[in-house]
Image (cartoon, rainbow, N blue to C red):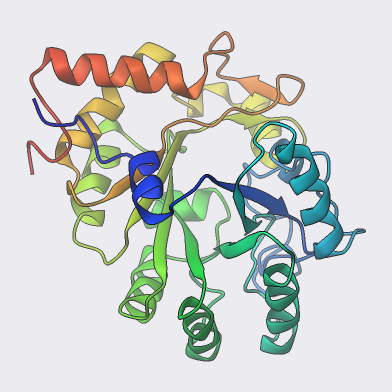
Length: 305
């Protein structure tokens, strides 16, 4: 039987001849819906502290953060290379001169062979893409866009301050430049139904990108969504682990089989997580259950395309 889904680890092994580890970097960026350009307060679900590792701080230089990350991971694996993961907030939201300085600094750290750049689709332009394309001629570059959903009404509700059409425009601008393109989706946003979320699979299957990160909505402390959830819990239909496993299997069946799936779930620190609480279930356990369900259906990614 064929593989149940197009997994990121196989893609990575084929792309690189040795182990490659992402190291997160907080370079001090912000977002246009935080600094007042479009809005303030940011996306309603976002608390950056839930995914920043201990060595990540904008008070440290990019070089120091990477060196500390390399020191941490080199204890686990003796031989490997690294990707500098510009993760916190919108990492193309600055003047091109600032981006050049930060990206070049990261690529100059010994052992760093490329960049992963997380950003918003409304924080890119051709000048920035021309420079990133130039970097991609010599280095591995993965540009990740936070699409989050194809539903514009949901994007409004979470104060995303961009549209799905902005995402399509950014992907079209980025394609055919030698840059690996990734997108990010969240399932369970307020106002969304199972049908509307499954429709995302059909819609994104025709878009020009290579890798997909998806995860369930999590309510975390210190966010506007946490306050709203406490006051209006009826507005939220959060997945149980069992429901989410079935949903992802259904989603994969509708998804273009060429799309590489990098992630299925989010794992916020227990001290931050309000809901849903899945009892500490890990990503690999979810993957195993999704694969088991697809095999029981004699199914796989793209079967119902």
